Length: 324
Image (tube, rainbow, N blue to C red; front, side, top):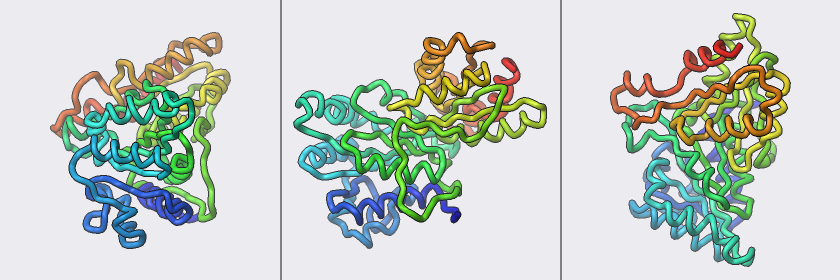
């Protein structure tokens, strides 16, 4: 099977859905023909589809999402790009109080088929305002689906599903994933929300990881295999809906779990998953639940300090060994 990058997989999904459905259009800062997006995901799409369907916007996140919500409830299928995930804070009213609640407030008479794409995560030394992982904010808002693809295959399949759906989707992309290559089918496919993927089979310890942490978990698992510790890596792929059954099935097999996410540890993604396991699968556990996450601190600009706070393979290996 051919290999393409995460960036190329996202671009393919956008191109295919724009060709398939004329109601799909893109909007965001610098996504058009002169720049192609801050991370080049939309590069070349304006040349193919024109400036009406690939719309450069002013530097106003609230305007971007407000426009997208209005377009969605009138029958369009907007895909809005927010240049950095941290900047969604500037559009929280439009996201949490409008997009998420329209269907409920109007008794299903109005829909909001909106996709918000945005990059999260640290690792490129751009400091606190552009390096956070805020996925848990959107897990907390009823009415929004949250996707967290970790591979090119998942990115393409989940984005196509998101665009075709009837609900607002918050689509999280880690900055360090864009250049990563992976196998992606050339034929048409989609990936349903709420279906986790076991990225590696194992017998001794389960690791549930998201986004770029999936790759660090796989690296840690390969290292631990040399020490006769068999690790299963489960990737939820979407946080809302969350595939609880896949996680619990793995825990029933291994009896141990480590949850790895890049966001802050307090009230984060790892906290929610750990709580679910504690409530619904505690009888299968042979050891305490372990969490590996970022300390509750802003992301430092200093490269050594940034590396210090971001979860890495050493932290994952240490957590596994503590319960194995």
